[in-house]
Length: 114
Image (cartoon, rainbow, N blue to C red; front, side, top):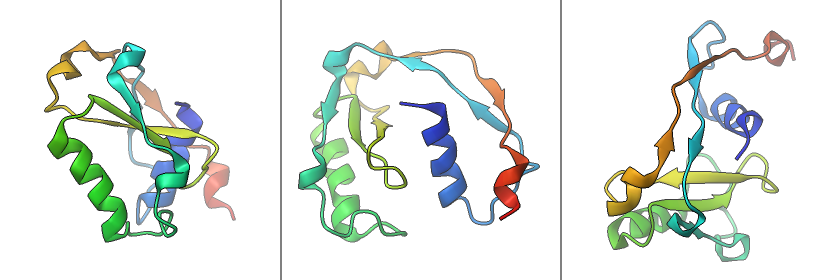
């Protein structure tokens, strides 16, 4: 949903985090009807742990297997008020997602000075 949320997800999940690596950002657009929203209240209690629990992984696995939508919207584990989007490239409607050319993305070096 937001570039800052995506950056925070990368920062939280990339071990080790290497500031000097080259990162890219992409802007994507798709019709609303391609998105299924997974409600926060239906996530397991331990949905924010890392690595992801079996229960949490099964939600995504089931969504891919059942081909319910090309996009799944769910809360961000690092910022639950924000939304992450999972894309299913195997879904028939994936081709309707427009992906703009990538742009360079640089993390603020202050993130490593903690």
